[in-house]
Image 1 (cartoon, rainbow, N blue to C red):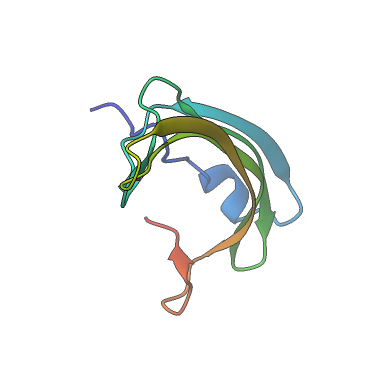
Image 2 (image 1 turned 45 degrees about the horizontal axis):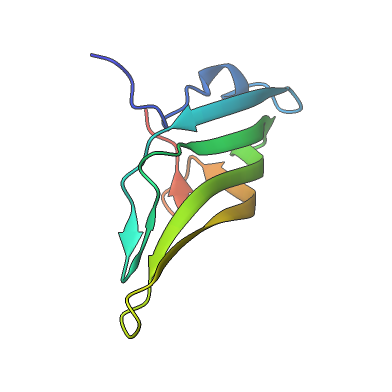
Length: 102
């Protein structure tokens, strides 16, 4: 079974605090909220660095998408790029906001 495109294997970093590796992802996504959605013709792109730290893996980098919007009042549609900076800790303990699987 193929691995989902946004799931990363980090077993090499969990027990090696201080070690890091860059990761570049490109994957189609089908995300929508109200009258906006990620353009299905333009994939999500992520340029990340994964770093092993005590208790988990720290992820930092940038994620970009192209968003399509629609105005409910005038019915116009437009697209625009969106980019966010990511700083997230993936932890092994039960209290972690984002848990590592496995």
